[in-house]
Length: 151
Image 1 (cartoon, rainbow, N blue to C red):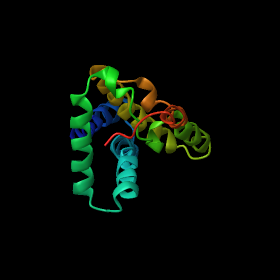
Image 2 (image 1 turned 30 degrees about the horizontal axis):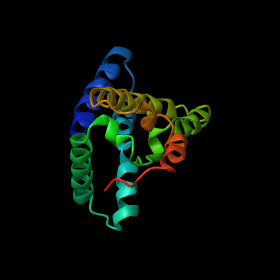
Image 3 (image 1 turned 90 degrees about the vertical axis):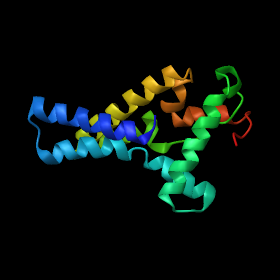
């Protein structure tokens, strides 16, 4: 899903939670920011691949990759490696759950991540892609071993 949708829907979901449950402004902000900033792993991947720190170029890079990806039939996509996004897998979420037992504010980070991932799963179903790509990054790593690089 494109960042602008994560920003708008993440803000609205955070606002609704803020109004219904009367959480503090800081908790609202943590939910909203974590619902958007989870995609920082995309930016980190861009930096590693391109050795460039331009956020604008990173956004354009992933928009172009998405356009190329969606131009392929879903069956053909299965032949290509998937990117590993470290914040998008349950491995990272388990770590956050452990930390949340010591730092309560992390539960609000997890709520923001849930909002983000819910939107990602809707997008994945809509584009007829594999759900595993946003569930386990270790599994993505394992399944990438016998696949071609996606340009």
